[in-house]
Image: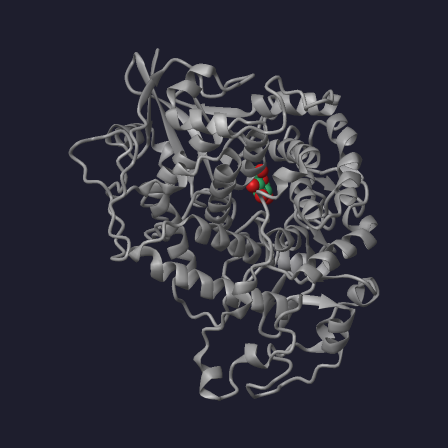
Length: 596
Ligand code: GLC
């Protein structure tokens, strides 16, 4: 049988669609905006914003191959490297501190590392013979993989970093370009179309017979229309931008971010995030389950994780956007948003002993622009666990803020990524790590790291999760321990000069993850048991571990992946009110505007 490759959007693939209705699911394809493998009768898609004014030109991706799409023991071949001029320069300029044989310089790999590299390579997915991503989990014994046999955008980030740090940029480049193509799909769920810039949560490569002798490989994305609970993957586009910057920084291939289609992709994502709505706050308003926690967990509104990814994606975009007349306004908008967002989060999400005591004594029902208790938080809302739990030293960002509601739970990724992106001040960054250190037994225990602390129990669990049997207390998203969070933690620790904390966590995880076959998550208060429904051979567990190891070994590389405080941003206040002498500008009035 011969293989041909294309995106489903291509006209030939639309035929394949009709023939194989199971591929169609709830997603209706309208007139294709994207020309994948070129069909001359179709018009290329144009970005409509007058500011952008450039058409989006896509590379031809069609090819022939006789290779299966999941390749065990994948490795980048020299042929594919030299065939790609861009990659050649990448490979020459890039490269990690590790040698070509996979040995860390001057140190033999541990059993766990060897196993992890083998498994990571086995999880690689190819499209038209080229590596394009990694499966979420790769357990051959798993009879019901659900969507774990797909390439998830967020899950691929640690895989990408592991490959980049190893000096292998090709898979990341392919991933970025192929997911960019998927972004242009016109998607409709029950007659409603989400925004153009939406990136899929995941994609799968399907093999579709063309006739009796030929088959075709097609990329089949999931924008949430098949996902459990139909959750919108808001974080996908943000991670895509963050990964694009990491790719260029590590490989030195800055030509990639200058491509017209890549520039347009960045703008489409930003357009979605920066469009006007009814919002009163600079934080991004999302539905429940729009990020790593992709199930109902009471994180609708303005969850911290999305805000910290949003902040870092804005910082990345500002760095990568080509500066010209067309992007001037956009860059100004980004700067204003960055400034307002960091003020908002630093001022209103931060809690420590002192702040909790303030909230405890809050007056309520204050009607005025001068109100101290701006969000009308009733002190009775402070949970009992928190009064005992908050240490004298240290603090953290709460999970969410809405009128009369503070979600006091500690969400690990949001807090760690606030450190990495400098959404929080240097002082807050240190305080968050102090809190993790002093609450080690609760937040790390037997396996790093708790996704959220504490778990929702009893009536709260019933109402907030909708009685989700997978999210029972101290399991899965409800207080389970997720080893993939190790890489972000390691990055934050290196940034703050607390490398010993990261080492302690990695040492704790290494042998156990290997012996337990790399589970997706662990259960119980202290993370003692492999999760009830946890997948084994979970790729981002494996890749998160490898990335952490490599960052610890090459801490100088970590600086390519985090952001320092931007002091200029602190000066920006676009609010005209302060200039008119009226006292309505909250920022002007706030004492703790710069908490450095
Ligand atoms: C689960 C996780 C999600 C992850 C996916 C694939 O749905 O909640 O964050 O991306 O599995 O691993």
